[in-house]
Amino acid sequence: MAHATANAEAGRSDEIMVDLQRVNKWYGDFHVLKDVSLTVRRGERIVVCGPSGSGKSTLIRCINRLEEHQQGRILVENIELTNDVKNIEMIRREVGMVFQSFNLFPHLTVLENCTLAPLWVRKMPQREAAAVAMKFLERVRIPEQAEKYPGQLSGGQQQRVAIARSLCMMPQVMLFDEPTSALDPEMIKEVLDVMVELAHEGMTMICVTHEMGFAKSVADNVVFMDQGEIVEMAPPAEFFTNPRSDRTKAFLSQILAH
Amino acid sequence: MEETLTRETQTPARARPRGSRDPIGWARANLFNGWFNSLLTILILALLVWIVPPFIRWAISDAVFGAATPDECKAASGACWAVVTEKYRLILFGRYPFEEQWRPLFGIVALVGMALLSCDRRFWGWQLLVIWALGLGIFFVLMGGGVLGLSPVRTNLWGGLPLTLMLAFIGIAAAFPIAILLALGRRSKLPIISALSVGYIELIRGVPLITLLFMGSFMLPLFMPTGVDIDAILRAQVAIIMFAAAYLAEVIRGGLQALPKGQHEAAAALGLGYWQTQGLIILPQALKITIPPIVNTFIGLFKDTSLVAIVSLTDLVLATRQALGDPEWRQFFIEAYLFIMVIYWVFCFFMSKYSQHLERSLATDRRS
Ligand SMILES: Nc1ncnc2c1ncn2[C@@H]1O[C@H](COP(=O)(O)OP(=O)(O)OP(=O)(O)O)[C@@H](O)[C@H]1O
Ligand SMILES: [Mg+2]
Image 1 (tube, each protein chain N blue to C red):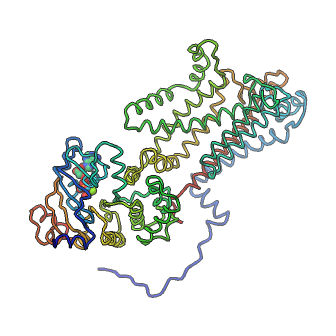
Image 2: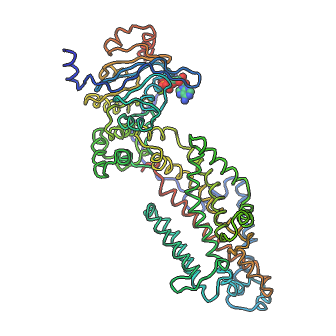
Image 3: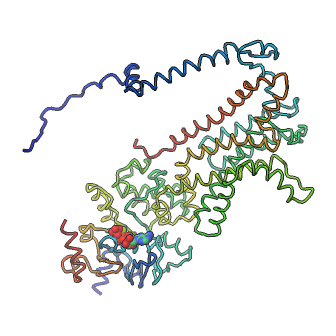
């Protein structure tokens, strides 16, 4: 009972948003995801960390089918990811993604980047799409850049546009794949601030990141991956102070060293 | 020992040194910097002095302009531009009935106007279809007649510049979308589509255009049921389109491949489907970076239309050759060919300039 109240206060519910059940994936003969199971509820914030090559990107890219898994089940809002293009498109509409390398569309202005998918995928009227876009550009604090092209912005600004672009689709879940690791140190904070705000508003988030400060302040659970499997998953307080597995300890001592 | 540096007073701004701005300084910096460049500059200047004045003397000072007889031309030591005055209607319009030649003239105007309007990016959309429907509609009504009180003129009498422009413009406009589909097809994940595209491209690209023209003219009729006759111009037009499409497809594929994978992924992650991704994200960028080679192909196609002479279509070049069939004027072929060279050059130079303009106006990567 106490558990349920705590959840309700943080905008969380017991409704399952993303469910991975014993997911396996191979690249050729290379077993990149091994029996990965993960349940993410509405409003929950998950941070995924782990050494390079451990399969973090592959894991979250399976959730919106940028990569195909070969075994196990992945359900997003109770829709199962199969080869059915209809399902895939339905899920992609509900799942936003932010990439390490921003991937803005360089031939479109910031505003056009943000209105494109609402216009063409959600079939929103132009006027409404522009209003929504401006709302989110204000939220990420760059409304004044709306008419510029991505190439004219700094890395931090571009990443904030990328976040706004995703939010314009009103996604139910946001995936972040190392959103700050291509940024100069002084720009990391402006992007993290936006992500923290988003977390406080109750967005369901799965973030691959090595920003442990971010993990400590907003994550409900930290997932540690190594060699394609989930080694440990725990709330940040426990994860950072009292890691159970030796692999986690070794990893933490490495990244906390600098 | 470590040295440290601190500067207490601010350095005042100084005037930029002279030298690179005034002509003498510019010449010294750009034409005479080092013995190799100096030598090159002198050689080129010498070459110009050697070639240009005699050419001007031949083409202008000693030339015969306006209406003149061949004998007057033979007496003069310069160019005989009188051959152009005498033969320009044959060169420009071929064997099109003389009294009706205002029609191909306005046909040219319609085609050129249509092409010029197509250059304006504001019309890139459904307007383009209207412009082309109108332009080609006017052109074919004028050329062919048979309606609106215009006497019918059979296509075997069409020739000269309107024929060249028609083959080139329709060739470009039709080859372009086909090439886009072929380029996308070649990258398709569906094996049948990609195999068909590869097969088509490699087959057509591997043979000379002339052979395609021959096949269209002499082999196609063998397969057609008797009584069905496809117009010779149409057959040549189709051969040109097929040929240009194969070339252009590879150019466009180069652009498609230059785009980072992240663009496809970002589009997919936003829920865009295949055609939306290609049409809104991938092609606009791929076509933009391939403007130079695309226009290069267009210019090549424009000039390749002269190959239709091989199947007896009287394009600008063949019309000129026929005009020079007159023994009185035959010896002044240089002047006649210079005349059509200028015509070709004007169109191709315009395309080249337009492509540079387009590249600049589409550039979005510069910080402003
Ligand atoms: N397309 C691919 N084909 C073959 N192997 C791949 C492919 N993509 C990734 N891999 C391999 O799969 C493993 C997991 O890759 P993944 O990108 O998921 O790692 P990661 O945990 O995100 O690493 P990083 O922290 O460096 O981003 C790596 O060993 C990688 O070399
Ligand atoms: Mg990664």
